[in-house]
Image (cartoon, rainbow, N blue to C red; front, side, top):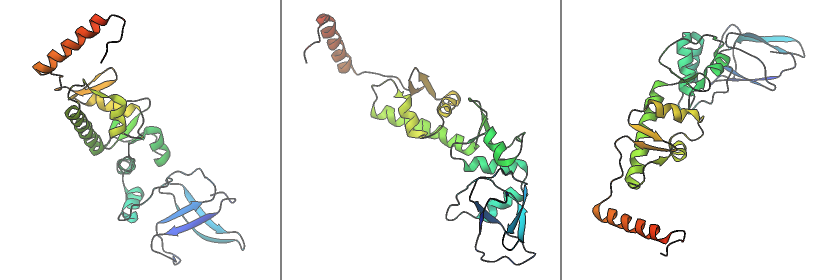
Amino acid sequence: IPTQNYVRVQMDGLEKLDPGRSAYARLVLRAPALLLPGDRFILRMFSPVITIGGGTVLDNGAHRYRRKESAAARLDVLARGTPGERVELLVRESFYGVSAADLTARTGIAVLPAGTCVRLDGPEPWLVDRAWLEASATRLADALRAFHKESPLLPGMPKEDLRGRILPGAPAFLLDVLLARAEGAIQEGETVRLRAHHVALRQDEEAALAAMERVFAGAGLKAPSI
């Protein structure tokens, strides 16, 4: 860590670390620093010049731990896990997945190992958790099913409405990838529908529709009255 960078050390449940012992710690830097997992560092006091300790970088991200999440269990994976296990952990923590470039920056691994993650084709290589992908496909089908129930006479759900309902804030290409992989959904222009959905009018509705069409056809360029 550069000498001009000041560090605040946070240790989970520990106020003091005796000489010769080690523990996981979060280092909060005043200024950004270029660090990769595996990089070693030394902490020194400037006045007087005293070496406080040293360590190895495990995670260069700002992960926020949930209340019941075990920091030690997570850091054990980053410290001792295989490259595949480390990649899977970071992908699983990312709400909508993560790009391959960001994963390389987070792990220092240039060639990402194959594992349980699913690689999606988009503007850039993108990895998502398999369980998230399956759950998203279920949410997509449920959203379309609910829309068809509410609006049975509409041919489909507007694509942007579907995006806002199941993938708010996600990269735009993710919905296109999901639709391309969804066997039960069809995209027609800017609308999406379930493959099994077809607009069907009752006899009285068809008669009313025919009557309205005749009124519009007879009015020519004039707007028909109510």
